[in-house]
Image (cartoon, rainbow over all chains, first blue to last red; front, side):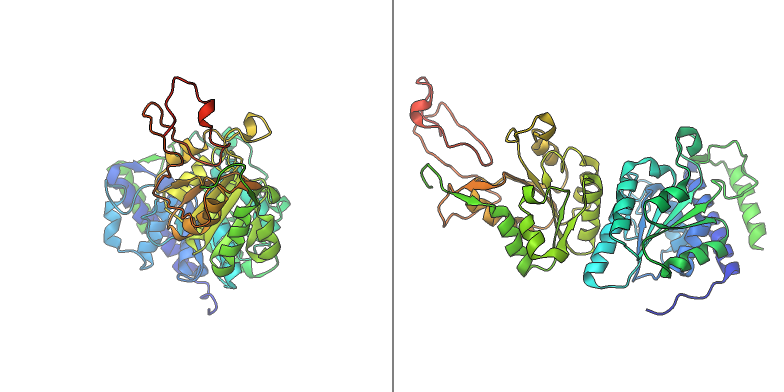
Length: 269
Length: 220
């Protein structure tokens, strides 16, 4: 396989903004949904889909299935999904379900019951090693799902097996159903926990495409699996959204939709 | 059918799994710190690169099995029946059964056959596994069937729960007996109509007629 494409920060920032536009329009169909997840993870998806991953060779696992809105948007914006399908998001019988399933396109594995994705990614990584393949396995996790013990079973095992081609990226947006993760339990210090489990750790501002890009590029250096802890804002820095809103499950009326789109279009102009 | 006392075979499952894996490079063997107890020490010693000990982490093991199966492997997952069903039910449902993957879950020490207490008695495993979509539940009755069942479930696409006793397994059927995953066997045919006993698995010798209550007809 050839080298990864060169970093183009402007293109990645624009891709992230377009992901947010797509997600806003998808959530507007029902008037509520997982908009915050797409707003917080837009740069992560932009970097993954905008060059960090080799599609058709590397594997992609999306562990928290409700983040699939970000995957749909990124896939549509990079030519991997018919953009016309986005209008069916979350509708009864649609391929693009609000929580991913076996029917979900583009990804190799999308979970829904939290905490299972890293183990599935380990399965892919072990299979690649048995076959002598050089593919990387990228697993997207959220911070809240680290409350599930299976994540740590998997983290321990991946380091024990020195799965060098396994890369985890965590959207650490400090948001779960009942409120901020910090109000429910203490996950921190996340970086030190992963390091103690035997992982290489990169901790970055998850809205900084250059920092994310460099973190993904560091997967070629050193031994053992790599985790990228991407610190993000559940509202993606959108000022039009009142900070008191429930970011985990945003209610979106047409006025708020218009305000968000105006702000994003201004950034794209 | 043979007559008691039955001869026994040592580790028929473990030997059959090695035999299968020698001719099927897609077969991998996962375990959770019960290698000798699941007869997979034979696999570990013969085909080390495809034997993966996950450690005491059954939830992790079942979801890893799902990933390996998605990549094209036929995955045999081995531990005690309690631990590979009750302990990781959601992982089986979501990582294995619903996506209809080639994962063969092998649970040992069925029912009350454990020398331990309730923690090691697999008494809900069949009910749990029967409730899942796509999943086939198989429990062979003797060493002849145990030898054949390994290839039979490997050839059957999709997830399987295989319930086994371990160690010395009796030979009940004749050598030419053919296991049929879709068919029960009539073991003894009486003339009476009062009692019909339906059972599965490896069990104590069949009750002799003279031990039955005199009010009952011979069993059928």
